[in-house]
Length: 379
Image (cartoon, rainbow, N blue to C red; front, top):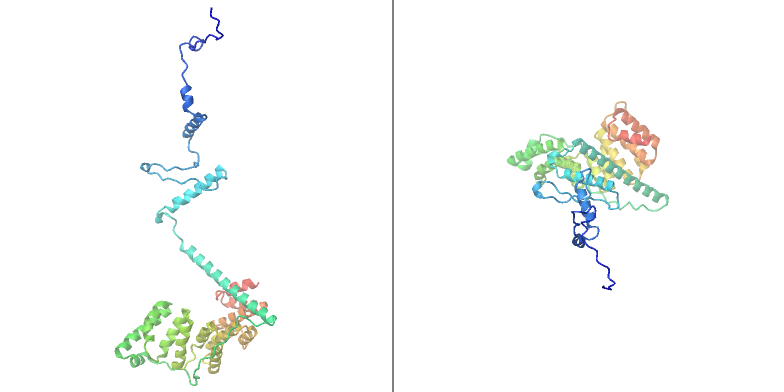
């Protein structure tokens, strides 16, 4: 009889046990070695995700086969710390914008010209308001310097006036242009330049200033003494904002035409270059000759503006107040003088008087410049 301590081995075939009869247990040892822990859970999760129905934007769009002719989308933008709902909302907005940007031009909403015009109007108003604020800032700085007894830093040395011959006779009598063009340029060129001149007059009336300058340039390169040519060229360059060139041409018009007709425009050109002595000279000459009431009023307005530019607001107000009576039937030069006077009152701090004159302007011309808006701001 054997005396070993080992126990007898149990039979491995358990097919004779109740419930397992006729069925062998599969060998899973190799599968456990091949699949690490948790692999079955991941594969089951993938299979369950594949069975999900699309109920919203997925967390990531993958690039699909081009043969399916479907667009590929980028990963979800946004902060990864956000919640899933927030990131899906960002994804929808992002890809909607992307699709709109890829649409053809005709599929997008057309731009409304009225919206563009309103935007440009708002931009012009902002620029005008910014310029006005800058002017007020400089004026306040100069007033503060005067109050402290300090010299203003905005002043600079005034240039000496140009040497001119005084106008001692009446204005130049304009006649027929054809004989004067023929005398100045010859028979053939005279006809050619006269045709150019009439085309320039038409372009200037239609405010096509670039075309007008291009057509009048040949006449300015030839030496002549026809006042109308210099007058027209000076007005065109003045409207373009080229004040130095405009002043040179209008000085020739004054000399060759012996006329004060464009003195207000010439004075305004010198305001940009701060040639105060030339403005004083031209104002005295215009006031002494007094060609017409409206022309003197225009010169008075420019002279008052030049005094205000130099910081002499009280003197500017006195100049415009002199002889001023609101007419019952105001004309355009009356409205311009009233507007300039109301603006000076506003700048000088006389708000009640400024409000009164702006109200008078809007009574007769509600759309005159920005008088209605200025009146609202003073209330």
